[in-house]
Amino acid sequence: MKLALLTIFATTLATAADVSITQDELVRRTQELYDAIAPGNQTPWKKYFADDCIFSDEKGRTLDKTKLVADITPLPTGYSGTIKLDKVQSRIFTDTVVLSYDANETETIFGQNLTARYHVTDTWLRRNGDWQIIASQAHRYYEDPAVGKADPKKFADFIGTYELAPGQTRSITAEDGKPFIERKGKKEELLPETSDLFFRKGVEGRILFHYNAKGKVDALIDRRNNEDVVWAKKR
Image (cartoon, rainbow, N blue to C red):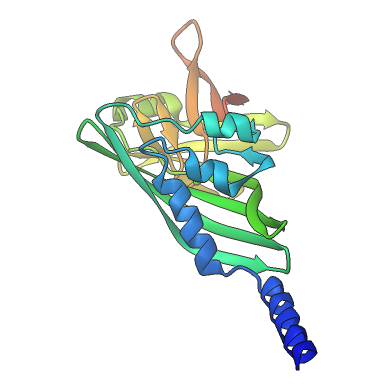
C-alpha cells in the first residue's frame, strides 16, 4: 500500500511539473509589469525577467537586465499613463512560451492626452521551475502625423515631372485644390504636415521640395528615416 501511495504521489508530482503555464497567467504577469511602469516599481521587472535576458525596445535600444531594471523609474510630476494588452496570441510548449500582443498606451502630460500603439513579442522560458522572460522585442506602430494646412499658391511651383534615373519618373499634379503624386499609374494625395512638408496616408516618410538659388523648385525629396532620395525636376 505504501509503495502504491508513493507511486501515486510521485506520478502526481511529475504530472504537475509537466503542466505548462497558461496564456491567462502570462497576460496577468505581463500586465503587472506594465502597471509597474508609472510608479517606477522595479520589483516585477526583477522577478519576471531572467538575469541573462535580452530586451530590445521601440527606441532601438538593446538592454540587459541591469540596464532594463534601472530604466524603470517613476513618471515625472504632471505625467500619468497606462498600458493595456490587446490582441494576445501565444504558442505554448513544455518549457518555452512565445507571447505576442499589442500594448496600447495612454499618457497624460499636464492634462494633455497622448496615445501610442506598440507590438511586443516576449519569449518566456522555464528554468528550475520558474517562468521568466528570456527575450523581449517591441516596435511602435506607424501613425500618420496630424494634417496641417497647405498653401495652394505654392502648388504651381511643385507641379511637374521628376526623374530619379532614366525611365524612372514621378509626377506632381493638383486637382480640386489638392496636390497628388503619381508613379506608374498609382496616384496618391499629398497631405500637408506644413505648407512645404507632405506625407501620404499610411506611408512612412515625407515628401518635400527643394528650391534653387533662383527660388525655383528643382527637386523632389523623398525623405525616408531621415535619409533622402532626390528626384530632379525635368519639366
